[in-house]
Length: 176
Image (cartoon, rainbow, N blue to C red):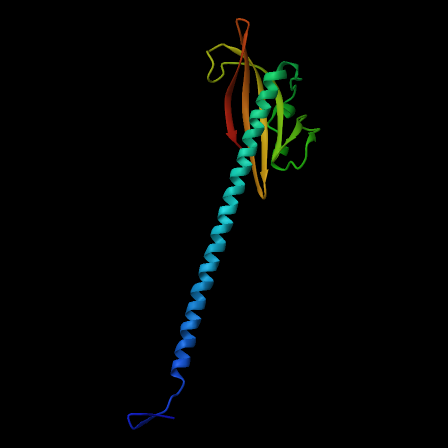
């Protein structure tokens, strides 16, 4: 007991109780802030991995296009619907090498793989004058970064006009 101006005041521990309640509230605010920061870090990491895998796949497309420019006519043309179809193994590919079903030889690059298919000749293609014939190639690139996988595909044309050879990307798409 203490004396306050001649009156006896008995403390019942209310200050302790109120300070413990405030401490509990501050702890809850701190924990929710930490959880929010962790969630933001996970999202940022996921976006970074997705960006890295996309850049690796773009690099694979460019490398495949340069392979076509250097030696495209020497590549064997696919002769069946199965070997001319987009390769399904791109969605589960884990290593370089030849696939027996699609006949695509996957080559490794930093952060992914790429494969080139010779589709034969075509005419009436986008971005080319009507009736222009061109040798077509499909380049499929897979970019990997962490848990992220990006699959890009482009169709590339080799056009011969008047003794000049030029190359043109006809289309591209992101499959995954």
